[in-house]
Image (cartoon, rainbow, N blue to C red; front, side):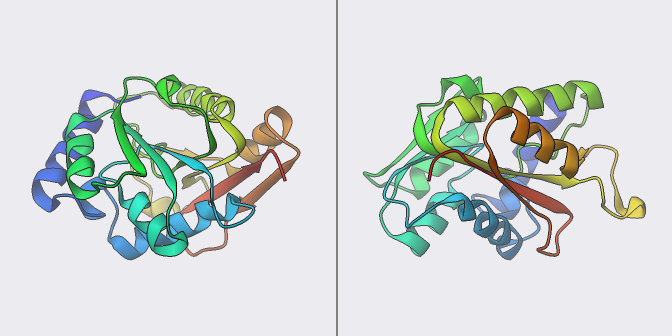
Length: 206
C-alpha cells in the first residue's frame, strides 16, 4: 500500500542519499542491520532455501544475507520503480531477482518471507485503513511462505513525546495474538533490541 505522500518521501530520500540505508528511510546502516538481524532469527538453519524480501528497497537485505550466510536464493519485491532499478544495478547476481509489483500477492511462493519497515509510514491513511493493510499483507506473507515469515513494526510502547503523526505504531501484543491464532503455533515476539519497534517471527515448519 503506497500513497502519494509515502511515494514522495522515498523519492526525496533516494535523491538525497542514493541506494543506502538512509535512502530507504533508516537512520543509518547500523539501525537497518539491527532489524535484519532480528528478522533472520526466523530461520531454523543456515538458509539454503528461497527468501522473499517484501519492500526490498535497493536490496540491502540481499547484501546482509550473502555476507552472513553466503549464497542464498533471494527474490526482492517493491512498488517503487526507482528502488527496483537501483537494486538491480547494485546487485547483479544470478541468485538474486528484483521485481516491481503493485500488490504483495504478486510475489512467488518461497520458503520464507521477510518484511522490514513496510508498516511504519502511513501519512494520509487512517489508522483503521492502515491496520487493515497490515493484516491483509500478513495473510499474503503467510500464503507465500512455506516455512515461515517475519516482519517488524513500530511499537505502541514508544515514548509519547517522540511519536510522529505520519507514523503508525502497532500494538505488539495484539499482533502477536493475531498471528498465533491465524498463522502458526510457534510465534516469537522480539521487543528487546533497544529500538522503537518490535519483530514478530512466525515459524510454520521445523
